[in-house]
Length: 129
Image 1 (cartoon, rainbow, N blue to C red):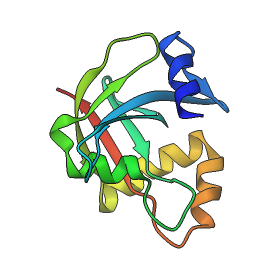
Image 2 (image 1 turned 45 degrees about the vertical axis):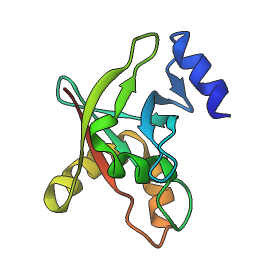
Image 3 (image 1 turned 180 degrees about the vertical axis):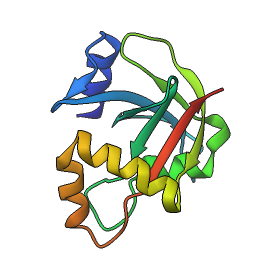
């Protein structure tokens, strides 16, 4: 599924289920292997993007673990564009809550998933370098 979505994105088709999607480039936290994960994103100012580490389970998705383990090697690929290096910032406290409200308003489905989870989904701001 990820490979198919990545191909669609590289052809310039950047939405899935009504959400904008990008390819997040990370490096495996243990393997050191390059990874590519399609992830929904939300605008945050002019250049920054917000992503949510939902993953649908009781633990954070692998891409989030990889991103936090090797933040200096992260990049994003928007539909039909070349990868751009980014700096990830995990949001906390009031900053996370403000971002979460914007995300939940834009995509109520994500808030519904969050309400069924026993963990708080991390929200990460990706800022181009």
